[in-house]
Length: 171
Length: 104
Image 1: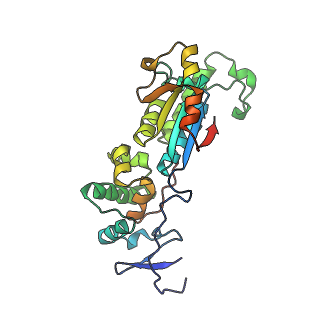
Image 2: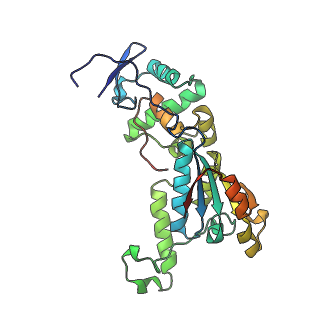
Image 3: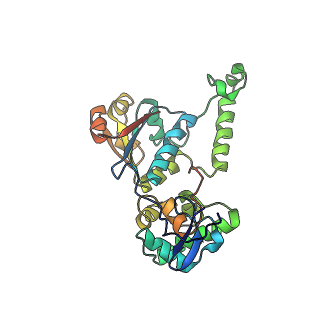
């Protein structure tokens, strides 16, 4: 601290250590509000670090990109001991609605967007969204039913090809 | 904490090179910081940098990308074009502020 000899400029290294080409695939398989956010937040963070991001929505995760459900994901206390409330309460009428609106408020208070707007931000940041073929077929859904920026409905094999060399996070 | 000299400015920086004292910053220094990481500041860049400075002065925190977009009114897509790869960190560096700590 006492040494005030000016040394040459220290410049942050903004090129990621792994070099360009780091790639992360997020497999989103859950359709509850609380399980939608981990993937969204991590994908967004990865994009902010210059990492190529692919999100694959499968099974219940389809609710995150289904126009009918994406804005209306729910959170329930049932089966979730981390709420530290008596489990019986979770089954009372109206409890899921109440828990959902409380969680939505906590998320909004942190200026974290709702699911559709979050996906919009991820796409604006360069992220890629993919829908699972089997989930679409099971639910008889087509591209028109899905969030507009979903790039395609693809098979599991396609996804494995697209994410060649990627780190994979399954949620 | 290292002291470094840039364009005749003696500045205190952390081990990564981010300014640790935002008061040592001025717009002339910003241009030099931008040049260090290969960014020539245009009016659009200045718009973002000045928002960061103003917001930091008001809130005490470096705004996240989302905040620069929702409060500062600069679309995220454009931020990625102006400050490629790591816009939040690059903007903070040029604005002489700490890296943003918010997650979103």
